[in-house]
Image (cartoon, helix red, strand yellow):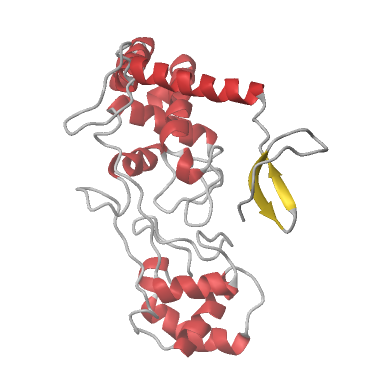
Length: 289
């Protein structure tokens, strides 16, 4: 509620004229240092608008008096990197994967390049150390869906997985539950069977019921003994390693939905010699066969 502006007897500060339940609002000025900071930030912003790219328009944006461009800076850095790598790149281009690994200097160079490329392009999914996560393969162990030999790794990086690109690795586990190919009780039995294959205690009666079902529905890809097949990207069910989790809930979810991830096709994004370097880095440092 508004009232007459007056001077507060205790502080000597003039009031704003606002009063609530007998409490008068003081018209206290802002600290001088705060005002200077505030005006300073405004002045700084105006200078930045003038010097740097700032305001969008209908057909472009203001370039700024300094004509600074992050795109140009990135191009310069990439050019400098190409020059730095220039001495070793031709050697990688002409050498085979085996020759690279047998030549200590060339292998060291390839690993240096591969580590940099891995951090820039692969670590987002596989982790900085290559240990992966749920749905993303661990490259530090000896479990390989599509094979862990040098040539296998190079092929997977080059063509990708389930991208639809020519030559890409392609396989898809059926969604037995979502597509109503199996009944819920059958999926429960298969879950126990997979638990049994991994060497853990499981419901014996469910395992017995699921044995013929596994041979009919799963053995074509995973093998009669459940040891998988790299030709199909079918995981080994006996090693206790699971891409989407090894709990009964996770296993049942996988049987129900048939999850399958996508890895980019790096051919065209990375040069052939860079892919070689990345393949050598992964093979040498991350559990290659």
